[in-house]
Length: 323
Image 1 (cartoon, rainbow, N blue to C red):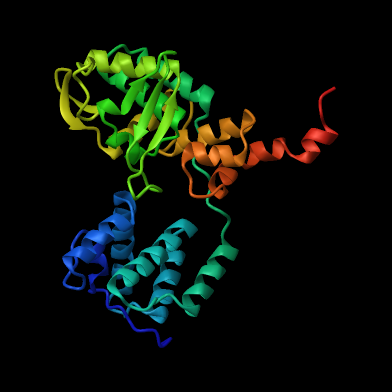
Image 2: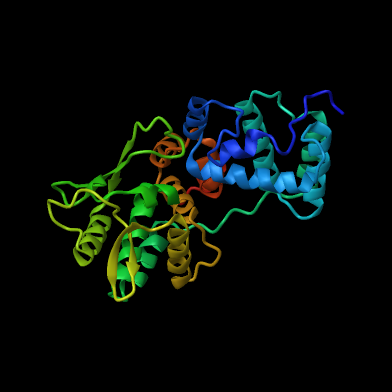
């Protein structure tokens, strides 16, 4: 054993991430944990902790036990991202519980060996600006409430590089029209804005018109309509609910709309990735792209737009400039 204090699988770490302090933190501490990471990350950490706890099967959650569990999960097909998420969840849970970090040299050896033995995870399908416009037009062509809503969602996610959780949280009053036919969008809280400072984003004229068409058809238009979810469930009989769409439903809308224009394997992240690619392709710098997508660093947009960056590199520009 590494000498690191063990965290039993039955400790409060999993309970913390599921919204209960499990007797290990004060109520104030549990509330602080709620704000430390986004709800989506907290749920992902909870799933990761459940998975590794099941894999441990009674073994202590220390460096030795974790390294064995990680190795077994890798053999079972777990990829880099999954193993990394498990490690992050374990470390976060230990930190909240006031315990030493159980991830040590044995876990590091397993992770390094797994990285050498596997290729990087394949990037999910991207939906760039042109494809997003085509997808929005395709779903809107049905002319029903669902199609209008889906088109507005696709266009909004593409313009504002929104995460699924951010789309689900949008309110009617978060869209403010501009005199030029475009609009501004307020995102009140996001994965990288846990203080709730908010962000103001730009929506072009075509996107604004798609949102207006959805609001008019759904009975959400008018100066007095400033509260309540922007994108709502549609009930049987084409009745619009007061309840917001779930993140799961939004992901399915993106997948279906992308499939309608021949893009298979799309996910809720596809529009965000595709817009990053389109920005770089159009001449935006990595810093500008980072700011547009509200990433914490330029490393993620650089990863997503690596092919576009290469095409604008020194060799492409200087050796093969068109004459």
